[in-house]
Length: 331
Image 1: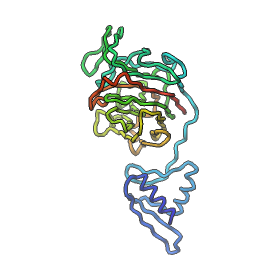
Image 2: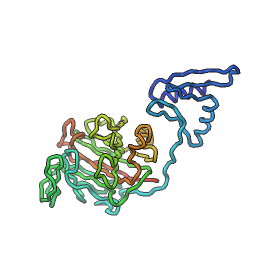
Image 3: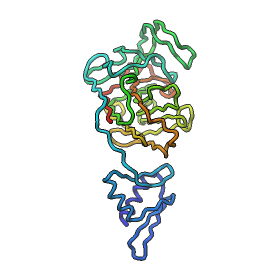
Image 4: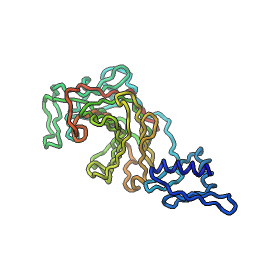
């Protein structure tokens, strides 16, 4: 009976809701039975078997409808396939990283520069992505503000706010694995740093998929956000966008942000603790699952825009740094 009560407590915690319990003893008193809210029934012998099998790669898991079941634990990824410890000085290793350029998305205030040390450089074993209010003269600037209708031409231009978005597009992409990034996040009104992933071809967004490993907005400093975008769940389809958040203390201190990508699930971690899960066939349908192809990695420091600037911006807080100690990807 103690084992049954323990499993009931575990189920309640996993499901996040009350669970109906029915304990029935047979005439001989040898069989205990638990009935969960949706009628899922486990005999004591089955539960005992599941407990034994947990060490053999199974765990208790609750789906969106509250049904408790034993499921396989995904294998962990141990082979290092991409890394950057940022041990050099100056510009990034161009065999690993490229850059987004210009005014790219979301009505953000910053212009992303290319290979400009004032906005992205290595020093002290870290990558520093710096957002500046420097009114910089950018030669041959790509002036492309899709939200304003002004795009498609280049000119030497004074840019009020500059930053960087570094990407592995065209240099490294992968399907399934674990991403680990140790970072200190910038915090001010308007800051919007992120770690995220896109497929090589994103022309049909959101159908192509997008995975936001973390997003952080300065007006909400005590929360980290995780999002998986697809056709049915995206920022153009509120409130059906699948997003989750987790509290965080001292986001300006070092934390390890990790993400595991399996064929049937997406898992988000902070400092080794699981924070959010998206399950294929449960959270998302099997037909609405674009996470089966190569994605590349992006690290960017946005400022203002639709989300980052929702509560206003503080340009007097600039310059501000987004500092990354390392990026490691395992398969």
